[in-house]
Length: 128
Image (tube, rainbow, N blue to C red; front, side, top):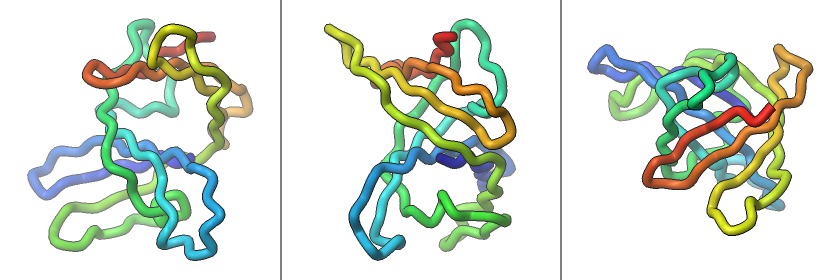
């Protein structure tokens, strides 16, 4: 799992949250990661109501390993890595499409539980 700041040419920015998926593929560039856009850092404490999430198309595994600023091709901006950690899905919520996950950032040894609600109103909500 990784978090990066994506500065776009317009002067705006957002955060991209990359969640690794298990892959038996030997070619790291062919592997893909689940990617979620958010306007607030997910590695910092969240407000009680949580934060809005925007699920994106899968991205390349490359972003999980990014260690320094990287200028994107075709003038799409600059990505700066901010945080790393691990995550795992722990249960499906009976009768809903919500998912519950646990995660831990390298900068914080506490394992936390969150709920991700599905589109169209995707949110990340702290459970503990």
